[in-house]
View (cartoon, helix red, strand yellow):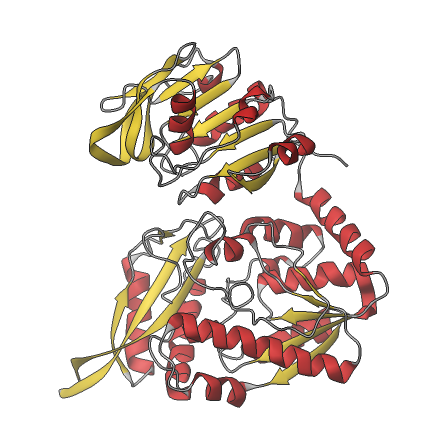
Length: 511
């Protein structure tokens, strides 16, 4: 089945992947390409519309990223966001100037709601700005359709050529009308049908895997988390008993998690399952290592080495399946974006792997899309909505060097935290929550005696896609219950703190 396509041309801005995420939210397939993608490749994809993203460059500088000018002559609707808006203004002869003060944050905006881009949206609204430069004078044949107090041309339109620009960011949640505006662009301007749904995607992905793999043997890197579970079930539906799932218990799992994973895949699914107990091996490799990136690289390489060894025991193995998802790929660095952190199954892969090819069926999907695919595949809801857990496990929740003692303390505190959140009925409201072993020690008093114990940090966030997240507003009485249990039940801990930073500027995990 052929789906409508929107192409997002990436200029390196921090919110770029969210644009694709919002477009997909509206059931329109979206592909992110570099800004300098060849014009013939863009034409061959026959997109219904093109979106230019934001970016950190100054459009008037000689080395600023530009698109092939032929893009503007394709007759395809174009929407420029932030830098993309400035690029359109610059190309067509408008004036781009630096603002007296960099504008970052929420701003009041007045919209021309008679224009199709802002139909059925309140005229007086708020938006999210993040820029230093702006279009100070419109190009010929462009008209103003929005303004703020400090940005007179907050949006512009050339209806004849169907080219539009907005200085604000409609893709972030801080622009409340953003989805409505994108919907107007997709459906009223581009003429999209909105027929890209997860049930269809699940069927298509299974079919693609079956065609690619045929009767050859496959190994799946199974962590027991949502992503690898959905990937495993998907490949199993395509390939049946040619798939073997290998679960590496690296000693960095949560309390009792290794046993739970084994139970689920041996009892609930008819899948070839091998558990490799490699706790000592991983902890030995990680001994004395404090740098977060080094931890990730070590874990990523050791994962592959274990899979190679197990694969040789099985015999000839052609493919390795991993549960890599889109945020993993983006945060590990793309052509137009910096590395935020290397993921063990992306940036952490070693150079030499003893497999013909790696299959990553979920690589283009965001976390909530993976959950929808999981439900479409018939996976139990409790498993699909399980807490996200990073591939490197607790290694990136222990700040500094890793020891078994620290891991055991962290496991105990994390278990208490999760129990209390579930008891309070908040386990489906908070997207991710866990404890962090900070390594910090401080003075306390217990039983009239001085203590010098460790500090545990609680992290709780709300999110849809892991690209952005806000800290969860856990009720004080629940936080109090968690704190009391931790300091009373875990003797090494005498202080509990709560992390109230969002992403950005922080990441969800501490390392």
